[in-house]
Structures are given as C-alpha cells and as structure tokens.
Length: 173
Image (tube, rainbow, N blue to C red; front, side):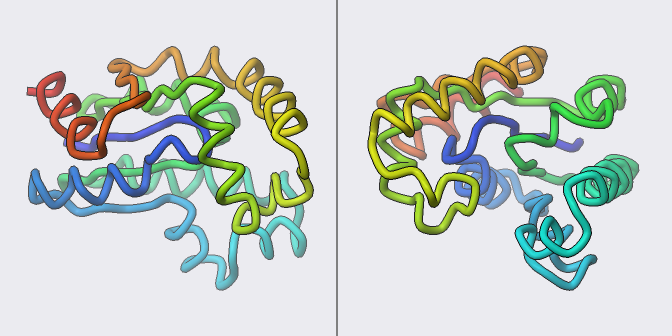
C-alpha cells in the first residue's frame, strides 16, 4: 500500500511521514527530495533554472512513477502537488493508495511558519504575522478543494506528533 500525506506547508507531512514509516515498517519518500535527487538541484533551483511549468511536469511524472511502485511507501508530497496536473485524480484513482489530509487551522500554520520562514523560499519575504495570515489564507482558499478530496482527514491542531501518527493508524486499519 502507498499512503500519501497531503496538506499545506508545515502541516507535518515529512515529520509525520517518517514516524509513520518507522512504525509501519514502510519506506518513506518525500516527493520534493525525490525530485531534487533526480533533477540534481533543490526545488528552488529547479524553479529558477527551468520554471514552474517544467517543475510541475516533472513532479507529476515522478509522482506517477512512485504510484506505480508495488512497495509499501509513505509518500509526503509538496503542498501544491495535489493542485496541479490532475495529480489529485491520479492519487484517488490509483487502487493501492490511501490519501491522508493533515489538516491544520490557519492559526496553527501561521504560528509554525512564522518560525520557519527563513527556510521556506515561498514565504521568506513575509515580515509580519498579519501578512503571513493573509498569504496562507489566500493559498489555503485556493488549495482546500484539492486537500478536502483526500480519503482520510486528520486534524493536527493541538496534538503531539505521536498522537497524529496514532490517529492515522486508527483510521487506516
């Protein structure tokens, strides 16, 4: 089975994904890191060198490749992955795949991203909490329709990472 974690930046997809993979004895794959290995550069560098259209095409190609695997994988995808190239349809239409939306409130995301903005090129320029709230709110509004199509929704607000992992396991099995 392939378990795909979707959600906005800082919703914990990679961290929770690694923990879940360890607990279930699955292989963990972060799609962004997978792309970086294949493209010989960071996601930011690929965007700069070849543009977003190229990146989104490669992202869809590598997603499809991973979904065709027969291995047990926990796959953390980028926040935008479900929103482009029919990727959410591909995820939902692939037989051995379960999609999980790690859902966080706007406040939770703003609080987390204010602390991590230096490491996130998309939001590094944002200076105030008000600007961050506006930016994320707009982004979420655009993306929520894709995230909400996931088969399982897990609210991460006010939960430890261990509690989120346990919630996922209870809903999966």
